[in-house]
Length: 199
Image 1 (cartoon, rainbow, N blue to C red):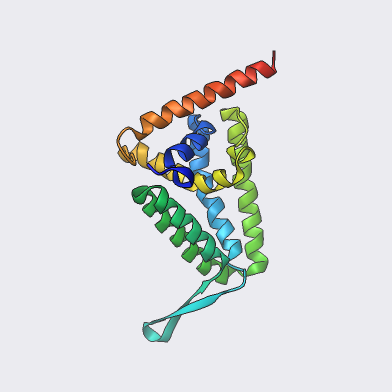
Image 2: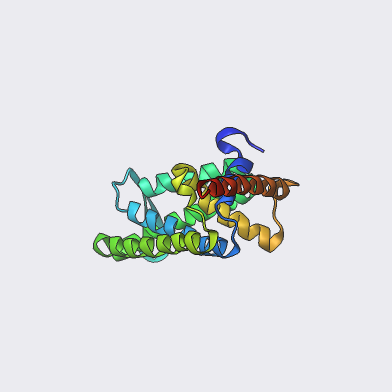
């Protein structure tokens, strides 16, 4: 149970208050990681700090570039591990897999095609999420209230939602019960504020 920047309960409750509708949660589960993946794909075309070359059999080589895509993957990975060592470590592995995958994809596509793929994917995924909020959640996205927290928490949030549904995962006993109370209180306060505006 970290405090401040790494307070998982606080971050999860904040993000969860904007994503309580089951259909909206499904939409975000589908679209959040592709947004991160395609963002990393675009960052693969930023200047390279240094490279590592790995020799493979038959004189083949694998060259991995360390650039802003790596920096962002590292920031997300470290943040997630500090938030929750278990689920965060899985999220960190996924971040680095995304980084490695986009490195390979970037070299195959080239910038002229990659940015079009990224643009199409980002527009499609963001549209889906905004529709999820408008049609199902009936509440504006979290990013309108806290941009940094929403962007940082989204991939970990949806991963933890999946882990909770599949295997009943909790970072510590009572986590989901406590977070659910915070989410309920936040949504109740939001609903009351919303009703006051209309009266």
